[in-house]
Length: 284
Image 1 (cartoon, helix red, strand yellow):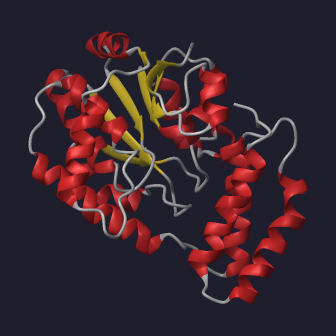
Image 2 (cartoon, rainbow, N blue to C red):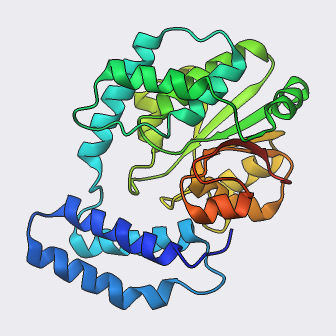
């Protein structure tokens, strides 16, 4: 997905969050935002992919602020709450419900002050609704005949709902070899390979790195090993907006995107109302 006019303002807002999470010093925050203002023209042009070039910009800001993980505390709180919600929720028997919970996991703000009971109620309410675009039957049909699945995770916290979905898929399709990929290192609140291992993903799948810290899965920045894996797997499930931004232009029918259209550019690309939940095949 190429950049839309709103994406630059979004990148600036995210940069402000990074500055605020990195330091309490307002002078340093101002310097950080002036640094971003000078860099914008270097990173964005008409052919930019928002997640990729925004991510490159954020990594430079991390270096400027001398903080390689500004979201560390936020991610810790997200992980604790999501883990508790999944534990309280117990086993989910229906595969379609597990899929919708995996999408809904991205919608809850797993942060300070969120009552786990309220989070569980919200998750189940969201999972009871319909998907605006629903290619899940095509996904399950492909998995019946597939030998391998690559699952691209998105954020911390929600990975516990991804694990629930993957466990159900393994039960439903016992011959399926599952690979789960995350970032090589921290970028905003995205899950890393270390986060996957802490969540026990290596007990249910083979954990792999994209070879990059950048949001989504920009293949031009991926490691050769990841590229070989990406090319040979039968089915790819890609979670979240950043994966859609970096992979949708491939029009690859092996890819199924699970996400909420949180912003106007994504809803415009998909032709759905803002806020819609979708399971959409790559050839959309």
